[in-house]
Image 1 (cartoon, rainbow, N blue to C red):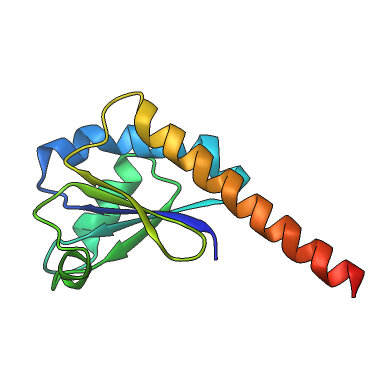
Image 2 (cartoon, rainbow, N blue to C red):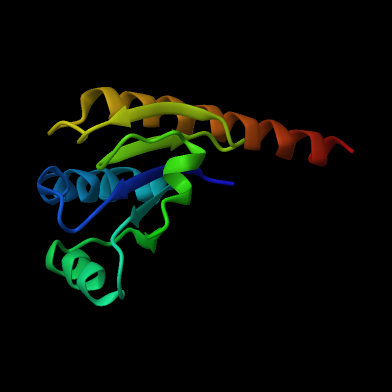
Length: 132
């Protein structure tokens, strides 16, 4: 499993609109190194407004839908936007209530740590296989 940034948002949410370029910047920086970003919209109704919003913002990360709010229930979310950084082994590392601030220094540092930890784990797995 990759390190995952799960982002919960909505088209009608002002801070979400401001935040999308920051998430795209994180995608461009960390996507090639194995970070998976999934931005899940809680909009109700059909996919068109969500798709149009993502295209308008030039998003290259995965977009999902969760109109009934099951992700928010799972992580006890309180609103949008919210982001959850999940380690390669499925642990919740960071819960960000509200928008990721511009520049995202704290989130970037956490992503960096998570990616390093996951690459060490996968390297040690390869060593074990090689020595058998």
